[in-house]
Length: 497
Image (cartoon, rainbow, N blue to C red; front, side, top):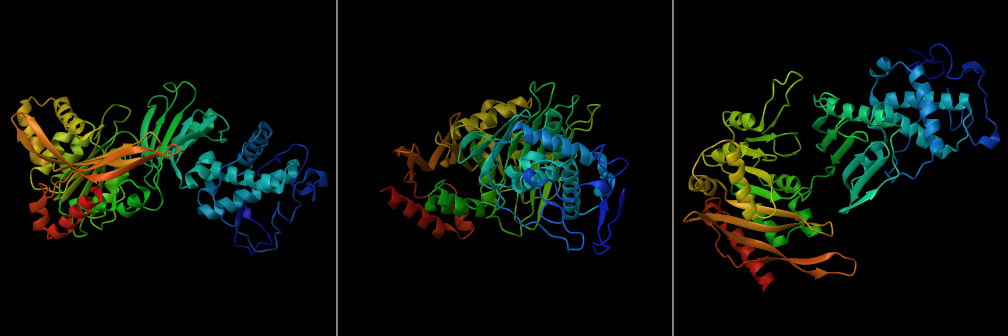
């Protein structure tokens, strides 16, 4: 239970030890004031335990760093301290505190336990242990230092002993591990429960998200044989813009200008690309150029898009419950949002028959709608759209389906992740119309690979295909953007020359 601690201003409440002390032979009052110097443990009143008459100290925020490899003895010590903490603290009372206060209380009690048990550890090791245990109780455990790093694109946990990350397009193993598979599963359940989902033996597959929009997938035993597999696609804390993509080389400055105009003049856009090619990031960037007075409705399986406009309605699908009822599919969301007076509909990821409803929306006055599709080229993207319409059971003639596609989609933007790990926009392609039964397209911007440098990085260049007046020229003139579009295309043509 919680009680007052004297000498600390009378304002803080801390958990007191319940029943027996964490060790059977030593009582709280009898713990040594200063452990043997050879142990390296901090003395009471110094680094290990705060002086009770001094004001509370707040630890300086540390820059996230890659954790070093830890031995079995560290995890044994951590397990003992954690067990003693759980026996000592009242978690229901701890849950009522603010996160910063709860973290301070846990640090106090862990310091007490370390002093009582007389563990041999340096001050830096003790600080690491304190931080780890606070993360276990209040956060996402060993994942916290990885989530704090902004240079990581993906976190892949394969059971409790193997954690991999993707940095700069390359996958590498970390020294991080979980106490056991049960701790890993507990953290997976903590993540998915925050968005009203569940993962256990009866429902072992789950898609969820973190508060910052990062995408989370969990597959638990018995489907995952070696312990739960957790995959997190991290989003950067600072939202990327097209100008930043230009600095990264993902698109040329002139190509970025064309994309800004495409977003501004309400072209219907499909962003195509493989897994991890940056489709969602690019979709976020394009939405920055939507006018702030437009009503936007987003439909997603897990809400990842981070739009900056003030008038945004975010919708999310729902999986079935234990009885197999209550499921809300993407098709249900797209159909419903048509009744919500949207000016733009944005579908985070088109995977199935909902593509037909999206095309119908694009074709019925919701210009500027956008979505992403998994495919490896603009031509393959069109074929995928046809296939997904067929998946919905629509028995329409092939020519009719293609006419619907041509009447709905204006631009296909192809994103790719190259073999050196870099992400590039490789095509900006217009859908022109039909000749007979064939859909006609034309490329505005292409990415040509010229070679690679001694470090293995690919060298390439975005070039114009020489199209001086694209099909959406009249739309650009309607929005008074034709001069800007002409300048961008001319500049791109000169660069190509």
